[in-house]
Image (cartoon, helix red, strand yellow):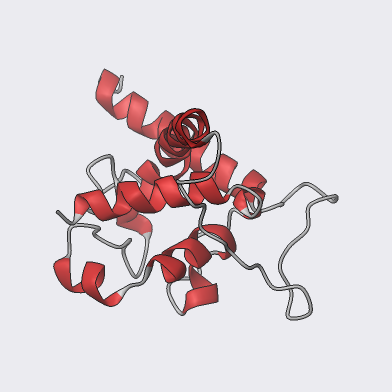
Length: 152
């Protein structure tokens, strides 16, 4: 019998991978994916816009749920690239604590990787796209904020 922590990791890994596939449009014939003719363009939300406090809280909550359900399986809860699914990945997931990576990677690159997947920015094709976030710039911005916080 698996210890509770191991069972939780296994469940999260399965849920995260399934959600990543669903988020990527696999199994959803109505899902749209970026193409050369229709690339994804990410506009990061301006926090000074009207209604920002309520919207920012909603975006922050959505980002937390997405990070937990989609990112933790590979990147780990602590962002070190040590999630329960990371052992099977080559190359391994990015360690968000890596200062060289933090300095060399722009917010726009991170946003594009989140929405279009790692392959879109020359990173691992195992980083699944999340096209459902294309129209959620505030949530993407909060995910970037979370990723940047690991580097501090």
